[in-house]
Image (cartoon, rainbow, N blue to C red; front, side):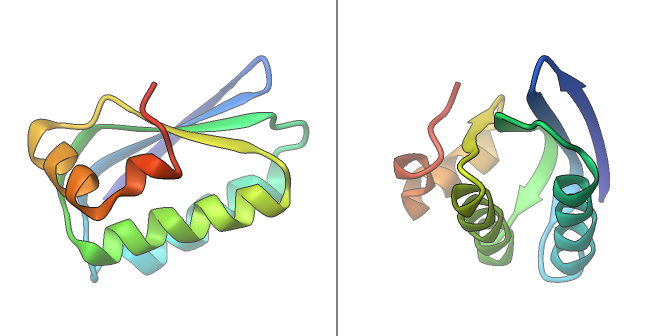
Length: 102
């Protein structure tokens, strides 16, 4: 799992690349939470899932946890460009109800 990011006009784009599962979720969680601490002035976060080849329920849980953390910080959270396989998992889980697709 690789995580890349960019900040553009208050929007933090987080690119998840590879597999988000039980083996990688803790590392991803720690790295992403570190970004929230380091970067000042975030008004919204967009998780770009184009490079995500696999995600299981642990990955969904990781995203929900980041959503909750950002909600406390009053930061809007979105998902963009999920692969077909990952989008099916997101739809079944109901994740789009709290993290809309842009």
